[in-house]
Amino acid sequence: MISHQRKFIFTRVTKTASSSMCFVLRDKAGMRGRGHSSAKQLRNRHRKVFNSYFKFAFVRNPWDKALSFYYYNARRNWDRYPFSKKNAPDFNSFIKDWYIKGTRRGFHHLSHSPCLDWISDKNGVIVDFVGKFENLQEDFNSIFDAIGLPPTDLPKKNRSVHEHYSNYYNQESIDIIAKMYNKDVEYFNYDYSSA
Image 1 (cartoon, one colour):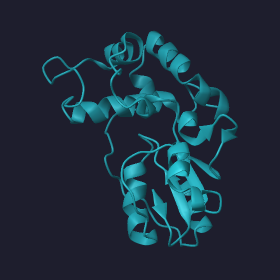
Image 2 (spheres, rainbow, N blue to C red; image 1 turned 180 degrees about the horizontal axis):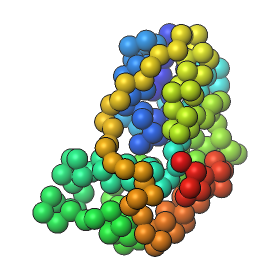
Image 3 (tube, rainbow, N blue to C red; image 1 turned 45 degrees about the horizontal axis):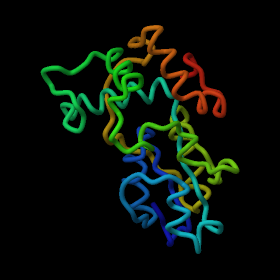
């Protein structure tokens, strides 16, 4: 996602309120583009301006992100995955099936990769600002300040409705997510109780 008008590039990491941000950024900052791309993919696509434009992305606590992903698919009646409404898994069965048995194979790998993979290359992080979903409005205001716009409230788009993620996990699922997203846990200082 790019805005030549405001000279920025936005790496849309899945399940980090990117739909809400896109809604505002298209309207207020003339952002163009669709879908989710990594910072490396955006660098390849916009080589002439990548280094000079302001680049940003958002990350999210991996246990919260996995729950959001579960509810996103449940809301879609599992239409893109090998489940149906009739045989939809409970949350902990989904975590085990998706991350251990490999149901996710055959789908866009990056979508389920650690957030760090979205925003880095072999030399490290390649975006200028990394906001956190847990500080969403405050960090989004920092983005607007950096691109020269007044603070703007984020609408709630594609939001899943559920209780705090700690009400859903069993110990096995906690450990699965810790292992699968250990890069995010270590780099962004996340832990199971950090949100």
